[in-house]
Image 1 (tube, rainbow, N blue to C red):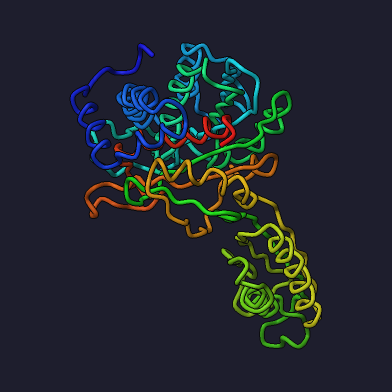
Image 2: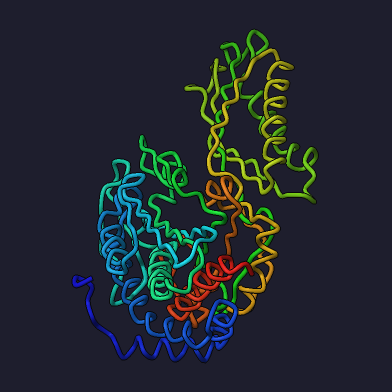
Length: 437
């Protein structure tokens, strides 16, 4: 870690002290995990490093499948802690294995490392100035979703847990994942690729946990059972008609009219065919293309869009209803249509039993609220398809309300007072799960 700048020590100490004032529950969290004084001391000691790591990663962001510097930083840190390390999974992924003094369950903790093709617009001394090429375009690069905080938090949790190795009954797996935001065009990446390359093959966890910083009040955690983030599927519809003169449409079959009816028909799926008391569902058409001239009815129209659902069963139902709706409308007008659905991220599903079991642990860390389901997607969902998972939101909004912007905004920023709360949360759920709480 010699390449990390050792600066701003006074401000980092102030951060630790201010967190204690805002979230005195850190010491309470430790009581559920192990010796409260010991865990509190370890978290307080590592907090300045966590802040430094976060600032360093923030200043040097890397896009999906290109997180080489971040992966090296993580690898060096884990090796220094005496943790078994495996690198190069899904291009740049890093996995650490910490085996406790006694046999027991296996728990996985996950953080994502990639940044976004966004030009940062926040005036910080460690703001990103990085630019690169993404899918053929020159772009700025910034941690506009907070993955720098996620990585630093998990590095901090690894340090705390490594120092408690002799007290751990079981094994902790630290997953530092690339490309959560998606791989560049033509590449694989992310959680799905890590699993494909055998992430859980040799050592399958009994549970997996993850968190995401959100522009919510510092000192709060939001979580819910079942669907917390939506699945994200894409679709393409090719509508085929019969080309003719625009002044004599009866001599052909107009795919533009059929496409218009299909768009409306798709909306009746979400408003009339799906039980929205069980799960919200969204079908959005993002583009329609067809025709080249005002007086020619074209032979084909193509449309593309996205599907967002928060329940796995309703996701399947929506797919089936789309197939029937698209084909039936096209055929009713004398044309035909072909629907292609490409599965994206699954529903981020919190195992109900695991969530209920770990809720008391989180309640000792922060003010826990029930999360509202949201329609962005997360590839943590693929881990939770393999083993019981729990994903929660960590409040990290700036103190000044005028500085609060949503994730993916060029003005998004993380309140560093949330970092030790995140370390405490990840450390606590790991230890409490291993200890059978």
